[in-house]
Length: 173
Image (cartoon, rainbow, N blue to C red; front, side, top):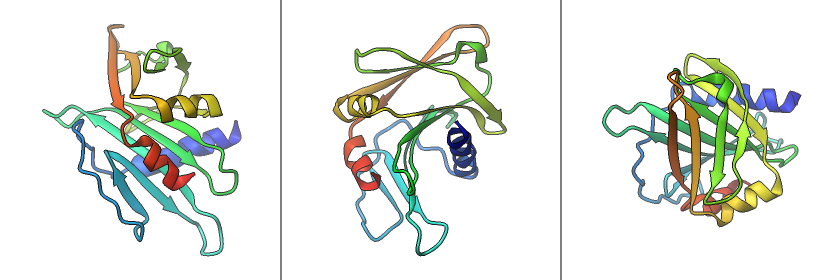
């Protein structure tokens, strides 16, 4: 659990200062010489604390309202260089009903509930280790549905296209 909280802190640091990506698909970009690549809207990043250490990597996807740029959800799969055990960190906007948590569903699969761990100036966060089964669902799936409630307890559902996820994840695993 300590590593999970470190992951949430790491994700919060990554979120600070990054531009919000639109909900539309971005053109695929491939450049293996860069520490960051974009594949169908999925951004991969790798960085190492020192030259002789393994890189900590992540795969990210942001969904925002096209009209205003307001972030609806940011999904980050972190792959630490030391363990290679993937973890999921999900960022939501402020103004959500925290006790309801966040529901995740790949295609028509089982709904998984995440507990919101913390909030900061950029939003609220939920984090969990990714099991091989959950990761396999994302690799084989077409859409990931993220649901949460606003303060009026109305459900907000965000669909995250999984097109390009497999190619992006393969770059960092």
